[in-house]
Amino acid sequence: MDHEIPTDRRYAESHEWVHETDAEGVLRIGISDFAQDELGDIVFAELPREGETFDRGDQFAVVESIKAVSDIYLPVSGTIEAVNEAITDQPELINEDPHGDGWLVEIRTDDDVDHLLTAEEYEEQI
Amino acid sequence: MQRHRQTKWDETTSEGHEPLLSEKDSTRHEPEDTYLPDDLTRDGIELPSLSEPELVRHYTRLSQMNYGIDDGPYPLGSCTMKYNPKFTEDIAGSTAAAIHPDRDPELSQGALQVYHELQDYLSRIGGMDAVTLQPPAGAAGELTGILIAKAYHEHNGEGDEREEILVPASAHGTNFASAAMAGYDIVELPADDDGRVDLDALTEAVGETTAALMLTNPNTLGLFERDIEEIADIVHDAGGLLYYDGANLNALLGRARPGDMGFDVMHFNVHKTFATPHGGGGPGAGPIGVREGLEQFLPTPQVRTDGDEYTLVEPDESIGKVHGSMGNWLVLLKAHAYISRLGDDGLTDTSAKAVLNANYLAERIDLEVPFEPFHHEFVASAGETDAADFAKAMLDNGVHPPTTKWPEIVDEALMTEPTEAESKRSLEQLAAAFNAVSDEDADTIADAPQTTAAKRIDQTTAARDPTLSWQQLSE
Image (cartoon, rainbow over all chains, first blue to last red; front, side):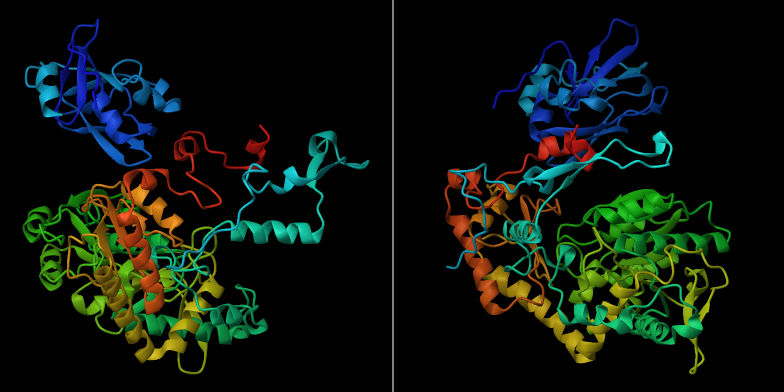
C-alpha cells in the first residue's frame, strides 16, 4: 500500500517524523502515515506534559489502537514546548491527518536532525 | 462436523437485534405530591412496562443470542473462564451458607473453620507457610502481594533503594499494573529464543534496586521455566523477592509447588484453578500465600485456631485491610467445596488432564505451534491470516475462539487453553473448527461471522465514544 511520506521533514526508524516550526529551535513531532496505518484505528493517546524534559530515544507518549498499545519514542532530546490537546478528544486525527493536525508534541531542542532519515531513506525502510 | 448456532431474530423482517427493555414498552411515572423539597424530587421517570413472561423471554433470548461455556467448547481456558461445576452453586446457595460476613466470631465458628481449612489447603497446594483469603480478585491479590514485598523491604530499611520490579515481556498485563500501582518502576525482561526468561538479561537487570521479580510458571506460552531454581537464586542473591503469578497453577496442581521452586509470595486465581466464577463483573477472590518471614505483613484479620476455637488475629506488622471482612465468603466457599470434592488425587488428575487436553488439541490442528513442549495451554499462529479474523471465522464454525493476538511473542497468536474439563469429543469439535477455518479462503474469513446474532462489533466507536451508563443512552 502507498503511504504519504512528505519530503519536508525527517523520519526516525521507529516511524516518528520531525518537522521544523516557525520558532527557532522548536521541532514538531508526530507519527508517520505508515505507522498510523499499521496501528489501525487509534482510540487513545497519552501525551507528556508541557515542560517535561526527555533524552533522545526516551519513550514520551503512548498510542493505543484497537489492535495494540504502542510506545512512541523521541528522536531528539529536549523540553516539551507544546502538546496537541486536540488529539486527547479526537485521537482519530492521528489516523486522518498524521502529518498535519494529528501531530503529537512540539519540543525545544539543541539537537540537529542530521541523524534522522530523509523521506527517501525512510521510504526504502518501509 | 457439528456446528452450534446462536438464536437470532430474522434479519429480513426486523433489524435483527433484541430491543432494550425500555424500547419495548415503557410508561412515564410522575411523582405524587410529596413533602420533599423540589430539588430532592425528579419530574418523572420512564420505566419499562412488561409482563413477567416478556421479561423472562428477554433475558433468555439474550443468553441464546450469545455463546457461553454452557453451550459448547470454550478455549479461552482458565485464563478467562473455565467450567464451574454446578454443585458448588448448590453449596453456596444453601441456607447454612447464608451468614452475615461481619457476624461475631463466636457465632460464626463454622464459617471460620471453612476459612481456616481453605488457608491450610492453599498453603499446602502452593508450598507456602501462610495464606490470606482477603483480596477480592487475582489482580487485587497481586497488588496485595507486592505491597507485602514492599513492607518487607521497608522493614529491612531498604524501602527507598529497592524501587524496581522485574517483569518478563510475556507476562500478564496485570503484573505491570500491580507493580506500578504499588509505586514501583518496572523493568521489562526480554525472553530468550526458546520463549523463557533470559538468564543473562536477568543477571544484568537485578541488583540493589530490585524489589521483586514477578513470574508465572508455566509462562503464558505454556512453557515451564526450567531454570526456575537458578532464577530464584539470582533474585534472592540480589536481595529481591520472587513473586508467583498463580494464573497458570492448574498446570502444576499436585505435581509441583511454587514454594518449592523458591517463590516467596504468590496469588491464587481461584476462578482459574478451583472453578469459581470469574471476578470481572462480580465478587471474586484472589488469595495470596507467603513464605515464613513474611506472614507478619499479611492483611488483617487472619483466622487462627488453638484446636478448639477459631479466632481472628491481626498480624504484627499487617499492611492493613485490602477488602471488607475476610474476603468474598461465597466465592471462597465454592473454592473450598471444589478442593474438598476433588481431594489430593482429583487435583493431581486435574493438572494431568489440563496438560493432556492442550497437547491433544494442538496435535489435532493444522496450525503451527512455535513454542514446545507446552503444558496446559499453547499458542498457535494463524500465519498469514489476521488472528482476529480467524477467531471470527471460528464463530461461524460453531465454537468459541481462543484468545487472540497475545502473547505478542507469537505472530497472529491464538492462545488456546481447553482446560481439564473438556472431553475428547469436545476437543475433536474444537479441532474441526480450527481446521475448517484453516481451509477457508481469505474472503470467507474476512467476512465472518455471518451466522451469529451480532456480527462485527464496532470496536473503534466503542473505544472512542463509549456508552457506559443508561443516562448516556438517552442523550
